[in-house]
Amino acid sequence: MHIVITGGAGFIGHHATWRALERGWKVSVLDNFSTGKLENLLLPSGNIPGGLTVYECDIAEGPLPDIPNVDYLLHLAAPVSVEESLNNPDKYWKGICHASQRMLTWANERSCQSVVAASTAAIYGDTEDIPMKETNTPDPLSPYAEYKLEMEEMLDGYHSSTMQCAALRFFNVFGEGQPNDVGYVSAIPIFKKQYESYKPITVTGDGLQTRDFVYVEDVVEACFTALVRPNGGFEAMPIFNVGTGEEVRVLDIAEAFGGEIIHIDPREEQRRALADISLITQVLDWRPQTKVLQWIKEDKNA
Image (cartoon, rainbow, N blue to C red; front, side, top):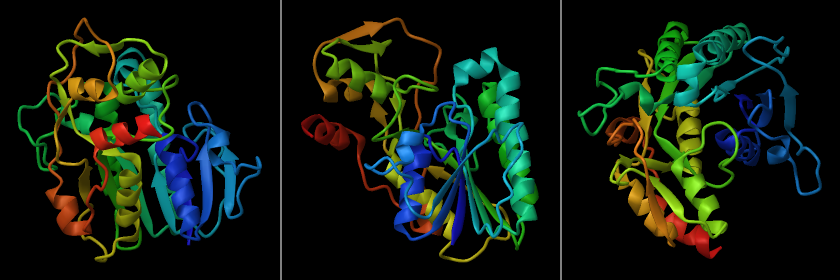
C-alpha cells in the first residue's frame, strides 16, 4: 500500500510516518517544514529510511508532486493556532481550506481509495453540551475552527464509493516529540519544559479548566483504522471524535509534573472539553490505550 501524509514531518505526522513504515507501506511525505523537522524522519545514521520519499512543498500554493498509485491520503498539514488565526485569518483560509481543496482534487485524480483529514474539537466552541458529540451543533469561535468545519464540508463533497473520506476531530493531543517552541504550543510541552528547566510551572487562572488529552500514538491508530475501514465503506461521510472520554484538569497536569506552581492571569478559553467517543468505539472498534497522568509519570522517570 502507498500512503501520502501531508505534514508528515510534524508532531502527529512523523509518528504516522514511522507507523506506516512499520506496516510495510510505501510512504510519501509532503511538508513545507514550517513547523515540522526533517530530523523527525531520519534514521540514527542520518539517512532517510527505505520506503520513504520526502517532498518539500507548499500544498496551499506551490506545485504538487506528480505521485502515481496513491492508495491512502492522511491529510494532517495545517496551521493550528486559534490565537494566530484571529490575527491572520487569510493564512488560515489558505492553509486549511485552499490547501485541502487542492489535496482532495489531487487525490481524486490519482484514484485514491481513502482519505482521512485532521479536524478539531475547536469546532464545538465553548459549549455547555458536555460530553461533546459529533451530532452537536458546531459553534466555531475562531477562523481556525471555522475553516476546519468548512474543510469537513469540502471533504463530504468528495466522499464517494470510490474515494471514501472521513474527518477526525482531534481533542488535545500529547506525546513524544511535541514541540514547545514552534506553532501551537499546548500545556503539556510548556509544563514539561518548565519542569525540566527547574522553573515554576505557570498555570493560567485557577487551573480548573478541563481538557480531554489523547496520546499521539492512539491518534495515529485512529487515523489508520479510519483509512483502512475494517467494517467496509460508508454511504455517508463519517465524522469521529478522537479523545479519551476522560476529563482532566489543567491543574492536575501541572501537579503531575511537580514542583512550584504559579497561577498567572486567566485568558479567554473554553472552560471544559470532553469527547464522547462512543461512535468511533462502536464503528471502528478503536479505544485509547494511554492515560495522560500515567504518561507524565513515566516520562519523568525515563
